[in-house]
Image 1: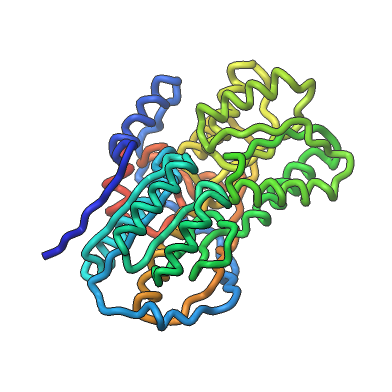
Image 2: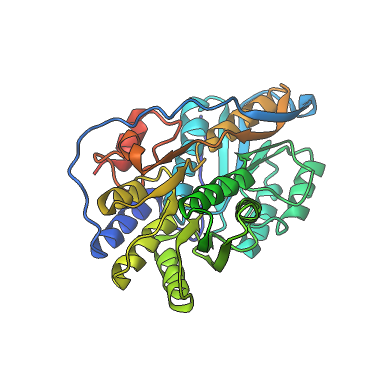
Length: 370
């Protein structure tokens, strides 16, 4: 008998979250386009993933069915939701005969809660753990404890300040920051004031992107970082942060924002202020693509990377089979701009959809149809 079960504390269900965000967007005056049923385009071919070193996982080999545990940041935005959809599909559909127990705790961006979550999950003695760290240092002791108990740890989406893990899956986030910086600085002709908006202070993903941004901007000495804000990868928080930067900064010629969810808030802040848009950054989130398309915003887009949760599950399976796995896997950064929106935007799906994913069409339609 299959004993699949989910433990989720202090959060909305995925469907409740999608409905709530949709209602919030509608109340803010965000118009939905009529469905066109246009499929998402296959992104421009990218180079192969970069795998740095291999790990012998033979000590973790055991016969299925297995018990998998996951400590996540929480479904507090659409990126986190589609990451969870990847986890659910791969664990409970593709590999449903391999896993008989699933424990998941969501930290809701709270590093203190994630420590307690990790301790609870480790006490259940799972066969493998997938972890998305809220911050680089908050759960180092727990990650190392799991590894010392012979529970292999797969990191996803953000680094932790430890080398005690089996495999880490992410993009080259510093590289993303350099791409943002190069685009904006060139758009400004190598001269001007730039506002920078990152997600969450202390999160290693955000720290890596910011490091890349500053490395990239260092090549343009006449481009100045005029303001730094944190928008928690949220349209609402992004708008608040942008309003504060507009109020405190005399001139902003371009915006380096790490993601389209915050970009939606930036556009709303500019609309409310009656200011002309400046070049900014985005991603493959459907809400961002719609907003940028409706407002003719010039932007540099990069893919969000939530689809790598599928790879994390695949590596968990390989680890429990005792197969060698890559130690660090950095997915290639896929880029596009406002001229390519129609290759990614789907008017038949809601704003929470992300174009670059590894989910079957029926799963996408079930979760994102208007």
